[in-house]
Image (cartoon, rainbow, N blue to C red; front, side, top):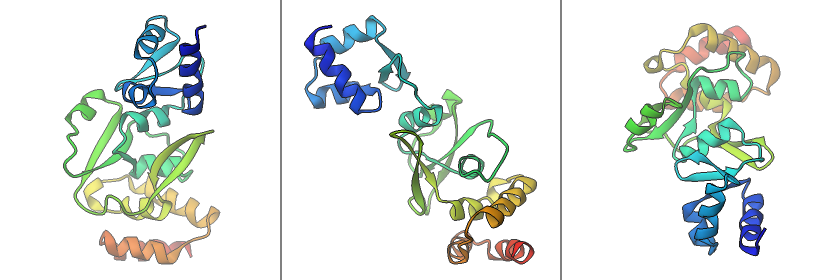
Amino acid sequence: MNPKQKEILEYLKKNNGILSYREVKEAGLSYRTYRKMIVQQVLEPLGNGLYGMADYYMDDWYLVQLRNPKGIYALDTALWLHGLSLTVPFDKTMMFPYGVNTSVIKQSQEVKPVVTRTNFDVGIVEIERQKGQRIRIYEIERTLVECLRPVYKMDVQLIAQAFKIYFQKYSVNYQKLMHYAKLFKVTDKIYSYIEVLS
């Protein structure tokens, strides 16, 4: 293995096993060596110009986040990632800000995109799926309350189960629940869940 390949492999190890063409250029790494490593299958394609080490484990959720950097895991997907649902989502639901062209995202059939005009940046947190592999997701309270919005037509049983798990396993943050209920105009619905589960 030549010094240029070692340099690229060291960079990959520091970067969770992933490298893009842009990062090669920014880090001053050898583009020719990088291409050679791809041809030799030392690096494998991950999509959207990303390449990873063939022997390095990549969490699927992390890869989807990398391929959709503007997206935030939301709704039923966020419920499952937070441990509030036993149902693994068939489609990974991600929220995108208004103006993002989601036609290519829809074609990939990897993500179910939801575009929002308002409150996109509110309540975003990061969780670590694997060591160093972090994904962006809406916090628990926002996720629960947003699922109550009629526009999303969420399964009532899924929502009820999620609220039940939240009230049993977590320290209930009434202030945040009410904040999001006012923000998403579902205060009546949130009151009924609080009355039953408190």
